[in-house]
Amino acid sequence: MQENAAFEDSSGMSHEKIEQARDALMQLRTLYISVNSQQDSPEMGVSPFIRRDDGLYIFTSHLSQHVRDLMAQGAATCMLCADEAKSQNIWARNRLKFAVDAIEIARDDAKFGGLCDDFSAAHGPTMDLIRNFGDFHMFQLVPRDGVLVLGFAKAFTVTGSDFAIAAHISKA
Image (tube, rainbow, N blue to C red):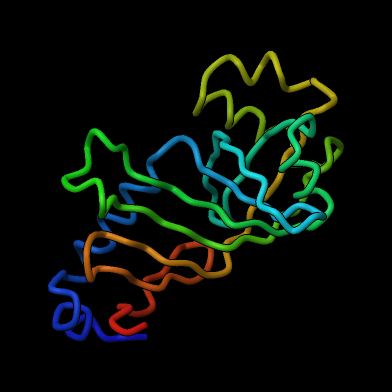
């Protein structure tokens, strides 16, 4: 891991500013998810999420191909991306892309009900409607590693469920 001074020297950003930008992305309400299909082509979706210390959670329907592929493979790539309208430069939108392991949370798991309640609190009453739909599944997404992009020459590797800033990417 680079020291704070190394981040500042190589990227022109303080470690504190990098973390603030990362944390702003974590305040988004939806994430993009991509899973390779059995034919090895990407299937994509978008899902509301909630964040907990042990990762992110999504509640989504297996009627979508990417969810069936997620159930089969247990791994995906996700992205949080800043709003185009709020970005200074469309070519350098702030974004966080990360690989995850996906663990399905069974409906009879002790934490399932609490997670559903947390989704309702975070995203409103639709969760109360879809909570008992049989085609919906709760997944814990456990981040492994990824890349945080905050502009030109401002990309950083991140690790773990807390998206710890590991290094400034300064070479290909």
